[in-house]
Length: 332
Ligand code: NDP
Image (cartoon, rainbow, N blue to C red):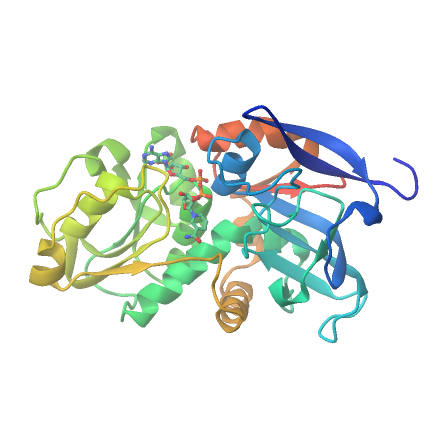
């Protein structure tokens, strides 16, 4: 790297294959935007796995700098909202899919995508949370708005619990005083999930059995990151009047359910999306994350990797081999 160049992970297409290489870029190579940011950290999410491996066909144009989130410091700004030196977070808005994302040492961005780093939070903690943790918070807020409160007689279920969204959801719900049960396909993560605050473990196999239209009412509510038969089973097992915040499809995009949970038990299915979430709700969710989660709470969840490690990790996350959250440090 010369003084003027910096490094980025760049995706190109060779035939139908997506190829990821570390390349030297200059500021002149960056797309248009009103804010230039020195990226301190990004993170690895399921969607990044799809983008970097090319499996999900979610990258809309090449070359692409992937990375659906980032946290860093503003270097230059022509926006009245941000000044040089401000710390910022970016998640969503199709960054890393349609627009260049966070796997780079520098990024030029639209200021309207940014959220100021909340007081008391550092950029590393922000990306230990990242898109996955932000989505977990949106799920918790959706359950609260549906009337969920701690102290009920039945636990809240979190599916895909050892993954990024699931891990943060377990920590958040446990910290807020809910009794949390965790569904995982990896029995070896039991100690980890208990450390995060889960008091009960359920096997993925058990929750993957196709349900009858209604099953015994076991859960006050749930955060579902898996979809498909597991979500159908969760819906059939949720208590009368309960709610399920559904944000993911790690197990598939279908939903083999019936109307019975909705019409006979008043169960509510709350769809959660972090990509186009309005700015006011983003700020509210990040303020809640700063209040409800300390960096310490995330210590056993998060580990750090370099840009060079991303291609390998992308394959791992798609294969369900990554536990918790992976912070990407472009300066490592
Ligand atoms: P991870 O890969 O970190 O976690 C997913 C977890 O789901 C895995 O760790 C595994 O947990 C479980 N899992 C994986 N494959 C299967 C399968 N075939 N059947 C059942 N369980 C499976 O991903 P993230 O936590 O980052 O994301 C989870 C989902 O949420 C993804 O679909 C992602 O696209 C979506 N998402 C949606 C967002 C939104 O805005 N709506 C934002 C962020 C993510 P275990 O081994 O413990 O069973």
